[in-house]
Amino acid sequence: MKRIEVVAAIIRRGDELFATERGYGDYKDWWEFPGGKIEAGETPEQALVREIREELSAGIRLGRLLKTVEWDYPQFHLTLHCFLCTLEGKALHLNEHEAARWLNYRTLRDVRWLPADEDLLPLLAAELLDVDEELARYVESAVVPRYGSFDKAHQEDHARSVISRALDLAAHYPVNRNLVYAAAACHDLGLSVDRKTHHLESGRIIREMTALRQWFSADEVEIIARAAEDHRASSDHEPRSLYGRIVAEADRLIEPQQIILRTVQFGLSHYPELDKEGHWQRTLEHLHEKYYYGGYLKLWIPESPNAAELESLRQIIKDEALLRTVFDKIWEEEK
Figure (cartoon, rainbow, N blue to C red):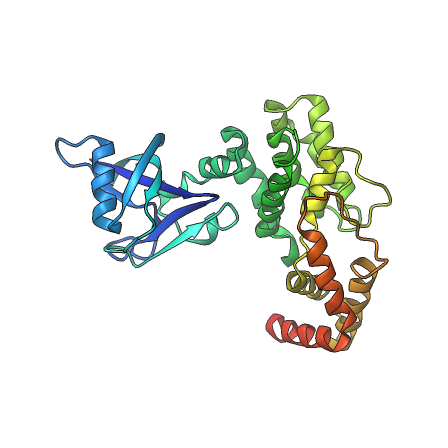
């Protein structure tokens, strides 16, 4: 089989990575990290600097070799050397690619990756989140995909959003980031059993996940399980640990439009017998019961941005005519 050796730039900007869309060949419209073939007499580092200048009219500052991927495509075997990089300057020009995006942990899987590049995603998740690589490979391949069978409000994007927010909050405290990561990833697994008691089922499932013993002691697995049990907004007790408070707060994404959307989606999924007015009344009652002044939702982490967003949501709930307009728009889109 023909062998090809190439280099790729994993260009990082804060919590984002730069990706490009191919505009040619068998893999047109697939996404990759920019780079190209190593020419005779070049080192991988020299080749990457040259390729990025040719493809993007940009200079890069090379960091460490992140990984070398070996991948068999139908026509050839690829050796892909991937280097962490930063841009020199801010100007970029797409000389060869159709499009480009800056992607973060939550959006890394929003594009269709070339197979060899896709193999990097768990490692890149670990890099962006600052967690153990092998733990990330397990969580991203065996835990987060379970959310794909849940209702529309609790799909993989929900899991990754909670993970991202939990680790942002964890940065304010002296905690084990791997433990926060695992707790956030597993917090809703109990939805596979029962909605009403899913938090308790999540705890049970976590205690039975023998794979977690590779990274955590029995006591740490118990902390993860309790964090899942305590995350539910309607819980009648305060989370029993800082980890529980972090996960509970991360699960409370107070984005007014998103909260209303998820409320309507949940109703459509679980109460299909209701007509439009029935769903409107259910949405109104739920938002008052959970989010309005005196509602049961509690915020646990002072560093969270949720407080200001919750007040914005309350103002929408207070203006029933405005809330009805938002509901009607969502209803038309979802139906």
